[in-house]
Amino acid sequence: MLVRNQTGGYEFIDFRESMPAAGNETMYSKNISLSLYGGMASGVPGELRGLEHLHTKYGRLPWSTLIQPAINLARNGFVVSQDLVNYMRSAITGNPSGNFLVNDISWAIDFAPNGTQVGLGDIMTRKRYADTLEAIANYGPNVFYQGAIANATIRAIQNTGGIMTHEDLTNYTILSRKPSQITYRGFKITSGSAPSGGEVALAVMKAIEGLTALHVCNDVGSD
Image (cartoon, rainbow, N blue to C red; front, side, top):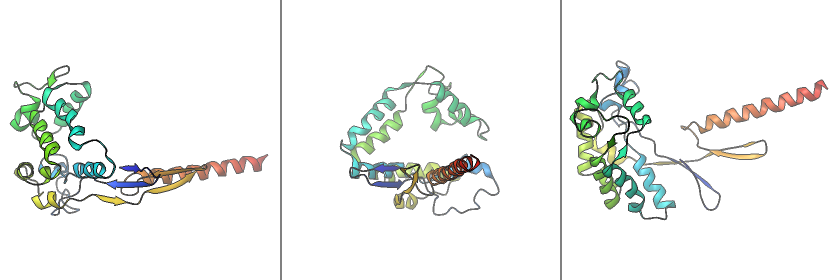
């Protein structure tokens, strides 16, 4: 995430998920589906640490106040939209476990509470998610990376073939990277640096700027 502070400076905060320490570049070479399904598809989550950093450095409202609307939505329910219907269809298509949203009790509690998958216009709740968010709101992000929630996360991942460990969760840290900047037609443009795609976009813009300038020179020369 690229953040512009009150003095006009920029900070590029990298809190993407990371590979577990036991991972390597050949871990999916024999079975690419492992990168999509099951415990091996899980990276070490970093979003919560990133949000913690943002709140500590730039936030004004209390942490719990910011999370409360999400808690209310998950606990009280929301209308299943067409986007969610499409996402559920995509998630089960090609999955070797079939319709895990219905057949796997850990998913069915939310996605098929009455034995049938929720559909367009139904009211869906995520009460366990609400409990997790409430714990994070009350006790901070550490409650997610350590303790009972972390234990449940690692157990679920390892029971489905994953390699993530408690140490992976505990050791996750965000990275503050130097932003990339260019001038484009007299304007200064700032974006995220590698490994984000921002640096590629800036390079494309500079290439276009050069081609445009060359085209103008050629037009002037032809006159």
